[in-house]
Image 1 (cartoon, one colour):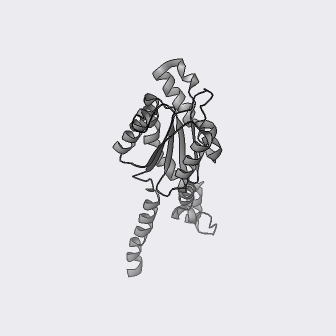
Image 2: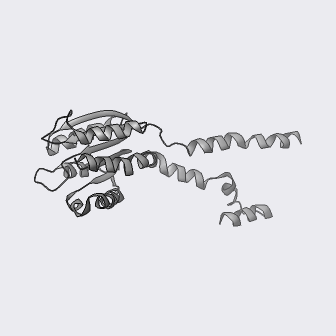
Length: 216
Protein backbone atom coordinates (compact mmCIF):
# COMPACT_ATOMS: atom_id res chain seq x y z
CA UNK A 1 0.00 0.00 0.00
CA UNK A 2 2.90 2.31 0.71
CA UNK A 3 4.04 1.88 -2.87
CA UNK A 4 0.66 2.86 -4.23
CA UNK A 5 0.51 5.92 -1.96
CA UNK A 6 3.89 7.04 -3.30
CA UNK A 7 2.92 6.52 -6.94
CA UNK A 8 1.13 9.88 -7.43
CA UNK A 9 4.51 11.58 -7.10
CA UNK A 10 5.82 9.76 -10.17
CA UNK A 11 3.85 11.71 -12.82
CA UNK A 12 5.42 14.97 -11.66
CA UNK A 13 8.65 14.54 -13.66
CA UNK A 14 6.56 13.51 -16.67
CA UNK A 15 4.44 16.66 -16.35
CA UNK A 16 7.59 18.72 -16.01
CA UNK A 17 9.07 17.16 -19.13
CA UNK A 18 5.86 17.67 -21.09
CA UNK A 19 5.71 21.28 -19.95
CA UNK A 20 9.29 21.95 -21.03
CA UNK A 21 8.62 20.64 -24.53
CA UNK A 22 5.68 22.98 -24.95
CA UNK A 23 7.63 26.09 -23.92
CA UNK A 24 10.35 25.87 -26.56
CA UNK A 25 9.44 29.22 -28.10
CA UNK A 26 12.70 31.20 -27.99
CA UNK A 27 12.59 34.35 -25.87
CA UNK A 28 15.40 36.06 -27.78
CA UNK A 29 15.93 35.71 -31.51
CA UNK A 30 19.08 36.51 -33.44
CA UNK A 31 18.24 38.80 -36.36
CA UNK A 32 20.27 39.27 -39.53
CA UNK A 33 19.46 42.45 -41.48
CA UNK A 34 20.46 43.17 -45.08
CA UNK A 35 19.69 46.46 -46.78
CA UNK A 36 19.79 46.32 -50.58
CA UNK A 37 20.21 49.77 -52.17
CA UNK A 38 22.57 51.80 -54.31
CA UNK A 39 21.47 55.22 -53.07
CA UNK A 40 21.88 54.70 -49.31
CA UNK A 41 24.56 53.78 -46.82
CA UNK A 42 24.27 51.79 -43.63
CA UNK A 43 24.16 55.05 -41.70
CA UNK A 44 21.36 56.55 -43.83
CA UNK A 45 19.36 53.33 -44.05
CA UNK A 46 15.99 54.21 -42.51
CA UNK A 47 14.39 50.82 -43.22
CA UNK A 48 17.22 48.88 -41.63
CA UNK A 49 17.24 51.21 -38.66
CA UNK A 50 13.53 50.84 -37.98
CA UNK A 51 13.79 47.06 -38.27
CA UNK A 52 16.72 46.98 -35.84
CA UNK A 53 14.90 49.21 -33.36
CA UNK A 54 11.63 47.28 -33.58
CA UNK A 55 13.24 43.92 -32.93
CA UNK A 56 15.57 45.12 -30.16
CA UNK A 57 12.70 46.87 -28.39
CA UNK A 58 10.89 43.52 -28.46
CA UNK A 59 13.84 41.88 -26.69
CA UNK A 60 15.64 40.36 -29.67
CA UNK A 61 19.23 40.88 -30.83
CA UNK A 62 20.60 42.08 -34.15
CA UNK A 63 23.41 39.59 -34.71
CA UNK A 64 24.50 40.97 -38.07
CA UNK A 65 23.59 44.00 -40.20
CA UNK A 66 24.89 44.65 -43.69
CA UNK A 67 24.34 47.03 -46.59
CA UNK A 68 24.90 45.85 -50.17
CA UNK A 69 24.22 47.11 -53.67
CA UNK A 70 21.66 45.76 -56.09
CA UNK A 71 23.72 42.82 -57.30
CA UNK A 72 22.02 39.43 -57.51
CA UNK A 73 24.98 37.27 -56.53
CA UNK A 74 26.06 39.56 -53.71
CA UNK A 75 22.59 39.57 -52.15
CA UNK A 76 22.25 35.82 -52.49
CA UNK A 77 25.69 35.23 -51.01
CA UNK A 78 25.23 37.40 -47.94
CA UNK A 79 21.78 35.97 -47.17
CA UNK A 80 23.25 32.48 -47.49
CA UNK A 81 26.08 33.42 -45.12
CA UNK A 82 23.59 34.69 -42.55
CA UNK A 83 21.58 31.47 -42.77
CA UNK A 84 24.75 29.50 -42.06
CA UNK A 85 25.52 31.49 -38.91
CA UNK A 86 24.66 29.81 -35.65
CA UNK A 87 23.48 33.04 -34.02
CA UNK A 88 20.91 34.07 -36.66
CA UNK A 89 17.34 32.80 -36.46
CA UNK A 90 15.71 35.26 -38.85
CA UNK A 91 17.18 36.92 -41.95
CA UNK A 92 15.41 40.02 -43.24
CA UNK A 93 16.27 41.94 -46.39
CA UNK A 94 14.95 45.42 -47.14
CA UNK A 95 15.01 46.94 -50.60
CA UNK A 96 15.12 46.11 -54.32
CA UNK A 97 11.87 44.15 -54.26
CA UNK A 98 9.74 46.12 -56.71
CA UNK A 99 9.66 45.73 -60.52
CA UNK A 100 12.42 48.07 -61.65
CA UNK A 101 15.08 46.40 -63.81
CA UNK A 102 17.60 46.28 -60.96
CA UNK A 103 15.15 45.06 -58.31
CA UNK A 104 16.73 41.65 -57.82
CA UNK A 105 16.22 40.74 -54.18
CA UNK A 106 13.26 38.41 -54.69
CA UNK A 107 15.05 36.59 -57.50
CA UNK A 108 18.20 36.28 -55.36
CA UNK A 109 16.46 35.07 -52.19
CA UNK A 110 13.77 32.79 -53.60
CA UNK A 111 16.14 29.97 -54.67
CA UNK A 112 17.49 29.77 -51.10
CA UNK A 113 14.06 29.04 -49.62
CA UNK A 114 13.13 25.43 -48.96
CA UNK A 115 9.57 26.06 -47.75
CA UNK A 116 7.63 29.17 -48.70
CA UNK A 117 5.44 31.17 -46.35
CA UNK A 118 3.01 32.41 -48.97
CA UNK A 119 0.56 33.73 -46.41
CA UNK A 120 3.15 36.28 -45.29
CA UNK A 121 3.03 38.05 -48.64
CA UNK A 122 -0.77 37.87 -48.71
CA UNK A 123 -1.08 39.35 -45.23
CA UNK A 124 1.49 42.06 -45.90
CA UNK A 125 -0.34 43.02 -49.10
CA UNK A 126 -3.61 43.25 -47.20
CA UNK A 127 -2.14 45.44 -44.47
CA UNK A 128 -0.30 47.62 -47.01
CA UNK A 129 -3.46 48.14 -49.04
CA UNK A 130 -5.30 49.32 -45.93
CA UNK A 131 -2.46 51.75 -45.19
CA UNK A 132 -1.44 52.95 -48.66
CA UNK A 133 -4.12 51.94 -51.13
CA UNK A 134 -3.67 50.41 -54.56
CA UNK A 135 -0.02 51.47 -54.95
CA UNK A 136 0.82 48.29 -53.07
CA UNK A 137 0.38 46.43 -56.36
CA UNK A 138 3.98 47.36 -57.21
CA UNK A 139 5.41 45.96 -53.97
CA UNK A 140 6.75 42.40 -53.86
CA UNK A 141 7.71 40.42 -50.78
CA UNK A 142 8.88 36.92 -50.01
CA UNK A 143 8.94 34.72 -46.94
CA UNK A 144 10.09 31.21 -46.17
CA UNK A 145 12.37 28.93 -44.21
CA UNK A 146 15.60 27.10 -44.95
CA UNK A 147 17.85 25.16 -42.59
CA UNK A 148 15.53 26.08 -39.69
CA UNK A 149 16.14 29.79 -40.40
CA UNK A 150 13.39 32.20 -41.44
CA UNK A 151 13.96 34.46 -44.44
CA UNK A 152 11.88 37.52 -45.33
CA UNK A 153 12.30 40.01 -48.15
CA UNK A 154 10.71 43.42 -47.56
CA UNK A 155 10.48 46.67 -49.51
CA UNK A 156 13.12 49.26 -48.73
CA UNK A 157 10.58 51.85 -47.63
CA UNK A 158 10.85 52.51 -43.89
CA UNK A 159 7.08 52.62 -43.38
CA UNK A 160 6.63 49.30 -45.16
CA UNK A 161 9.42 47.71 -43.15
CA UNK A 162 7.94 48.97 -39.89
CA UNK A 163 4.49 47.71 -40.86
CA UNK A 164 5.80 44.23 -41.61
CA UNK A 165 7.88 44.12 -38.45
CA UNK A 166 5.31 45.38 -35.97
CA UNK A 167 2.22 43.68 -37.40
CA UNK A 168 3.66 40.34 -38.57
CA UNK A 169 7.31 39.54 -37.91
CA UNK A 170 7.80 40.49 -34.27
CA UNK A 171 4.56 38.79 -33.14
CA UNK A 172 4.98 35.64 -35.24
CA UNK A 173 8.70 34.94 -35.68
CA UNK A 174 9.25 33.24 -32.29
CA UNK A 175 6.45 30.78 -33.02
CA UNK A 176 7.62 30.24 -36.59
CA UNK A 177 11.18 29.57 -35.45
CA UNK A 178 9.85 27.00 -33.00
CA UNK A 179 7.87 25.29 -35.75
CA UNK A 180 10.84 25.29 -38.12
CA UNK A 181 13.04 23.66 -35.49
CA UNK A 182 10.90 21.02 -33.84
CA UNK A 183 7.23 21.67 -34.52
CA UNK A 184 6.68 18.08 -35.68
CA UNK A 185 8.19 16.82 -32.45
CA UNK A 186 5.62 18.79 -30.46
CA UNK A 187 2.82 17.10 -32.41
CA UNK A 188 4.32 13.70 -31.67
CA UNK A 189 4.43 14.47 -27.97
CA UNK A 190 0.74 15.35 -27.96
CA UNK A 191 -0.11 12.10 -29.72
CA UNK A 192 1.88 10.05 -27.20
CA UNK A 193 0.17 11.51 -24.15
CA UNK A 194 0.25 8.99 -21.26
CA UNK A 195 -3.53 8.52 -21.35
CA UNK A 196 -3.72 8.12 -25.11
CA UNK A 197 -0.78 5.71 -25.01
CA UNK A 198 -2.91 3.29 -23.01
CA UNK A 199 -5.84 3.40 -25.41
CA UNK A 200 -4.34 1.05 -28.07
CA UNK A 201 -4.17 -1.73 -25.44
CA UNK A 202 -7.38 -3.57 -26.33
CA UNK A 203 -7.45 -5.99 -23.44
CA UNK A 204 -10.50 -7.25 -21.62
CA UNK A 205 -10.20 -4.46 -19.08
CA UNK A 206 -13.32 -2.29 -19.31
CA UNK A 207 -11.55 0.89 -18.19
CA UNK A 208 -9.00 0.67 -20.95
CA UNK A 209 -11.78 0.33 -23.50
CA UNK A 210 -13.50 3.39 -22.06
CA UNK A 211 -10.31 5.43 -22.38
CA UNK A 212 -10.01 4.32 -25.96
CA UNK A 213 -13.51 5.54 -26.65
CA UNK A 214 -12.75 8.97 -25.19
CA UNK A 215 -9.59 9.33 -27.26
CA UNK A 216 -11.51 8.50 -30.42
